[in-house]
Amino acid sequence: MNIWRFFFTLIRRNKFWFTASCVLAMLSPILSAVGQLYYARIIGIVGENPKDALSSAVIFCLVISAVIYICQDLIKGLRIYVDARMKIRYQCAMYNTIFQHTHKHSARFFNTEQSGKILAKIGNLIFGMFQLFGNLRMLFLPHLAFLITTAYLLIRINATLGILIIFLSLAEQFVIIRSYQKIKPLSQKVVKEDSKITGILTDSIANARLVKNIAALYHERKKLCNQINKVLRLKNTFGKKLGQSNMCTTLISVAFLIAKLCVILYFYLTPSSLSLESIIFCATMITRIDEKTYDLCSRFSQLQERLGSINDALALLYRPFDIIDAPNAKKLKIKTNNIEIKNLSFAYTKDKPVFKSLNLSIAPNEKIGLVGISGSGKSTLINLILRAYDLNKGKILISNQDIAKVTQFSLHQNIALISQEPCLFNRSIMENIRFARPKATDAEVIKAAKLAHIHDTIIKMPKGYDSVVGERGVKLSGGERQRIAIAAAILKDSPILILDEATSALDSESEQAIEKALKELMKNKTVIAIAHRLSTLKNMDRIIVLEKGEIKEDGAQKDLLKNKSGTFSRLYKLQSEGYL
Image (cartoon, rainbow, N blue to C red; front, side, top):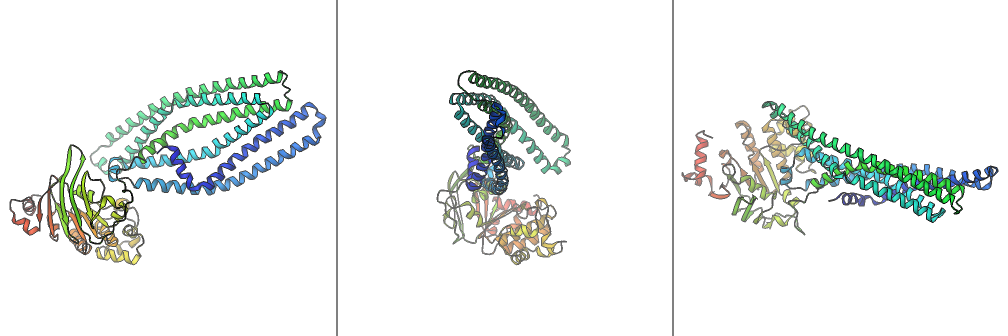
């Protein structure tokens, strides 16, 4: 995705208001150039014969000038109204587009990139596009309209003279732009390194407790200072280059101005019969042309850094998606909530395969427990069922439908996930529970909370369901956060439920309350539960023991315990004896 493709994607949605704004922005400078022509005509008539100051020709020019200035004011007022309407629509389109596109990235993207860096890029992109959009409407297009109108009027006065002035102006622009193009790579490097400062700050603040607890403040400050110094050195170099470019462009502008004046003087002295009016207009307009071109170049140089920032942001945010819906992907429709895993092979890197030809069948409404030491592939299997990653080989079928051929949205609609650390927004409890089904009524939310055994705790809070939980739910205990997550899963009522260490970090009393809530939640659902605390799997129909990506044991808990040499029996014995 390049800048202009992204820009026109946004404009396409608001073509009318954008076109109206641009047309109005160009009308004013066009009228200004025409007004200068009538102003020069008045000076020319009076200069040649002062007695004609009140002649009909002068009065006509004055009337036309007055009409032009009045029209300019009317256009300005209309443009303010149109700009206000257009900016609102443009802003909504940009925020929605970036927000929606960013959320389409896979888990790999968000695991690789820092959240602070992503947010910084979004901010840079939005600010940069607003600047680009404003400069295009309020500067580049109006100036271009003025220059084209002026060129036309100059050619009307004298074709050869007009063409020479236009040629010199274009040559001036070309030389200046080429001068600024040389510093563009450096500006992009400055932006890239500058964004790393925000990433370091965000990462450190997000882990402020860890920094404090291990006395790592000075280490973090040193890391930040090193990056700041690196950016400052780059900005210093960029400033020098920019200053040199500005000095060159100033000398170039002066040289071209002298050349234009010499051309006008030459035509005046030769028998080309240029009138005083024409000379005044030409001399006045080349000065205005120089002003416009200088303004354009100055803004262009300022825009270079912003364009680098936009490109850098687009390179990250519009990176090709790791996971995309298949062409003509259909919605997942659950008839029988069974799960089939056939010949599954997957590896994060080619040299470290996680699964090789894994096969697993889970019947409708069956409760499966996944057991294994760290690195055995439990969480990876869950991520593959959620299609956080694509398979290297094989298929995962839900209700006899390949998840690679259904839409990701419909897949996630039919799966509820409760993790060890539930994600809560810094919003009210009501909003956090309703997040699972936004159209749910208050009564349905309260019913789900009661089934999750959290209702009584909520109503004792100062604001009840309107109580704000804080960032990541810090105002709640671990057990309360888990039960709110369970209430959300109950409200969602998906046919497939995944529990990823849902009770491992809780005390016994909280675990008991949550187990009651989970019992309600698991009714008439296919359940896959990861647990290191094996006692939490007593209600599972089957236990799957994974080891290095392979199924080592598969069966009911009581049957697995009979195999004294088995992995499950050994782990269960260690836990029951208190070694783990």
